[in-house]
Image (tube, rainbow, N blue to C red; front, side, top):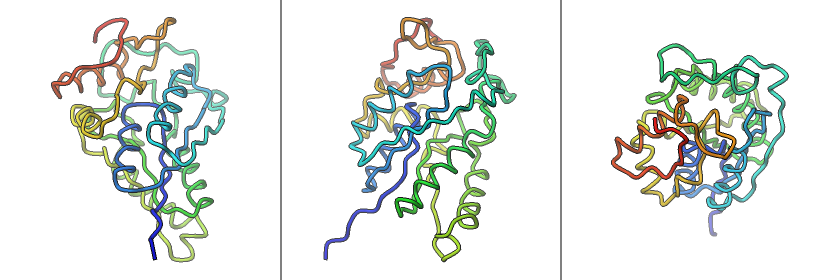
Length: 229
């Protein structure tokens, strides 16, 4: 009897990290159910990037789920607040969206249980990142416990695995993984504040970390920046 490949829900934002996370899931033989959250963020270009990446990954399905987090606000990504351009600091920046990964993982968990799969991939990173609390390993571990306690599958003795394969990678290592996996990093989008003509700004935290990763990996950066970081 031929064993059917296992399915996995992949949170796909359209960024480099989620692209590599999805490609790693594919490399492990999972059938991908891509989930993109359209949380009414100020800039929509990353949703287009997510659609491109889902197609390249040959995802079995790609759901773009609307969720209006602009109603909550509290972030430069969901409110009319200027995106910082001074460089990557140590404090949690205003680009942090309150509880975003908790919300996204909860939605991914709902999809996973509905699809009868037990693996969820998320591209969080705890090394080269902007200090977001919901990217930390202890948060990911805690959510596995939440998943077991809060689902019928968990109550019936099954477990969910939250895969965070980039958790301890630097941006340089992530850029190198994209290359190894045969993924075109130019398909992804990272900028928090794109220009009106569709370029990465080059100065927000995300642009700076992205460019630094390619430089340190010794790889060409396919990104078009309005200003070089």
